[in-house]
Every structure is written in C-alpha cells, then in structure tokens.
Image 1 (cartoon, rainbow, N blue to C red):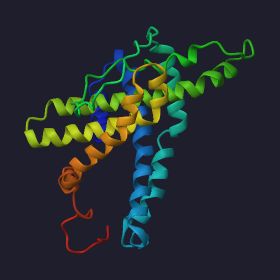
Image 2 (image 1 turned 45 degrees about the vertical axis):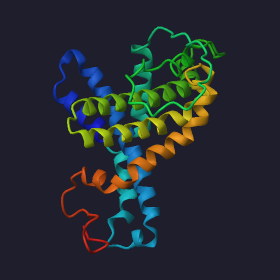
Image 3 (image 1 turned 180 degrees about the vertical axis):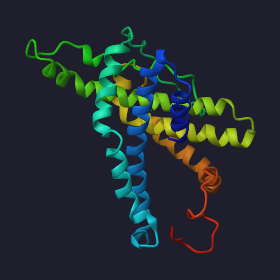
Image 4 (image 1 turned 90 degrees about the vertical axis):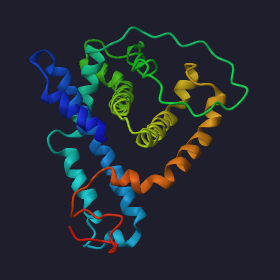
Length: 256
C-alpha cells in the first residue's frame, strides 16, 4: 500500500497533459484499493486486540468508522473503481494471449524463488469481457452490465500487479542485504496472498500446475516462519511519528 501510494503520488506530481488520463486512473485505483485494504486491516487489528481495542483511549475502536469515510470521500470507491475498470477495458485492450502449454508437475519441491519479472498484466482476466454473451441490442447499460463483473475482476488483478511493480521498483533500489532479504520474502508473501484466490483460473489456463497448488500452503508457512522473528523490525520500518502507539513503550496503550 505504501509503495503504491508513493508511486501514484510521484506519477501525479510529474504528469503531463499527454498522460494525465493514465495518472488519474492510477490515483483512482490507488485511492480505492488502499482504503479498502485499510478497512480490512483496521478491522482485523481491532479484533486481535480483543476488548482492549474497544477502550476510548485506544483509537483502534474509532479507526474503522474513520476508514469508512475515506472509502466514500473524494470519490466513492465503487464508482471510481467501476469507471477505472471501464476505461482500462476500452482504452487498454491487449491482444489475446494464448494459454501457455501445460507443463508436467515437478518431481521435487522447488526452492523458494526470488520475485520474478512481472508478466503481462491480464492474460487470464482480460479476455472474459469480450466473449460473446446474449444482451439486448442497442442497450449500452445492458452491455456494460454483462461485461462489468469480469472488468472489475480484471481491475483487481491489474491493481495487484501495479502494486507489485511499485514494490519491485523499491526492492531494486534497496542495497542493504538484510533489508533486501526481508523485503523479498515480504513481497513473496504478498504475491502468495494475491495468487491464492485465483488458482482456479491460473490452473485452467495452465499458468499453474496441480503440483504448484499443492505446494502453496507449504510456501505460505515457510514465508511466515522466515518473517515472524522480524515483525518488530518491519513495524519500525513504517517510522510512525508520535503519538502513535509504539511496540517498545512500557504502557500498552496511549491516547491519541
């Protein structure tokens, strides 16, 4: 979320009249995706803190309601998400990508890879809106309603890949070996969470094999165990200013 936000901010600050539309689309998808993610995160944090998170001195109790405001303010997320999906569909339609040939499953569990180069954005999700489906003639609303579910699915995948681009760009410029290692494993964990819900599509289009899918739980466990001892380091890396609660303070909660 941080890398995506920084990328969108930088892109908007440097945009020209020629690429303003692309910059606006990046801002729109960043605003919608980040605030939706923030709602999920704050809700989970509140639940994991138990009853303490409901105390007035702990701002976690008020954060979910605040996030709801950001989801609606400055452009309702669903509206700008739908608009961005339509623009991406009509103005950025790639040539259909044929499925990759089916590969036999590996005979052994492969080692944990480094983040791979980003593939073409939409080899799986994009062709769906263009498949012929029955719809009333001369009815733009009906045509859009037919394409909308796949278009929104496409935008979700596109946003995950755009976020990955921003992450890999930052990773490429990270020179400290320990920091690079932690960010690499964190990136892999992010990619794992993004790929897992789409394993059915990826399997059907031969981008994954059954053997790959069987290994996903093991990969998730391996990544989690590698990162768990460094959670405090990763949290400190956000460099949150006072008076945000800090994990090293003696008092368990601070008023904000």
